[in-house]
Length: 165
Image (spheres, rainbow, N blue to C red):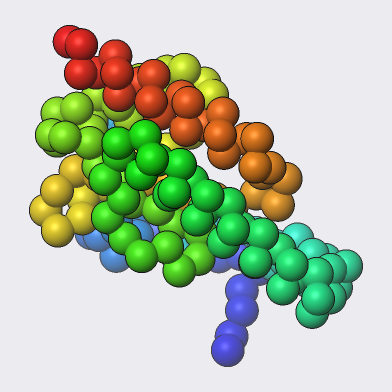
């Protein structure tokens, strides 16, 4: 595998450049502003691998195992608590991703908006089987059981607000 440190490409066709280099996914949020990720291969940034190498070196095999297991346990907890609060968990939680929907797509989308506004946690929207869903990615080693419960409370409050509209 060939790695790179930096590079430059001059292109006069903005649309061609964006289509050649962008990643796609319904969960990737785009704005009207210039998004740097649309102009670099695979959303790359210089020397990102250094942090990964340092974490692997520091944690070792057992530490990585504990990290991955912990992320999975928190994702499973998230799914269970959401299900217990009337949300529809759509996927089998096999690692750290949870896909959730509310009664309708409109309520799902409004719930995402209210969760994000609350500042309690951040989630994104996505499409799954042509249906709007809430995409949860548990990706911090510091996420605790209490953090998940607090986030679920934010989900419930946001959904309740969306339903009342």
